[in-house]
Image (cartoon, rainbow, N blue to C red):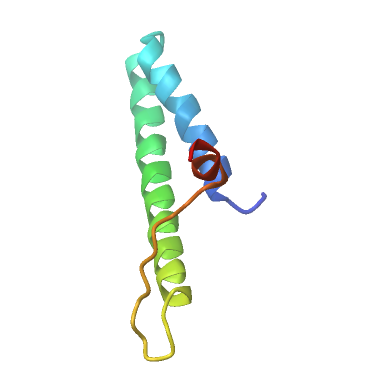
Length: 80
């Protein structure tokens, strides 16, 4: 089995949400899908937390202070 990635988990979570919102699933199947969705949601949340911590570490200066700068995307530059 391939390693779970954030992208795969998010895509599967989106699919589960669509299935649950359709209302076409029998109750037992809906409960199983809901449980799977909760696990995927926790996995994605943990991955985002880990990534935030890594970014924070990378943004520290030599004294350990976090440097905060506004994010300017390529699209933002075009708008100016």
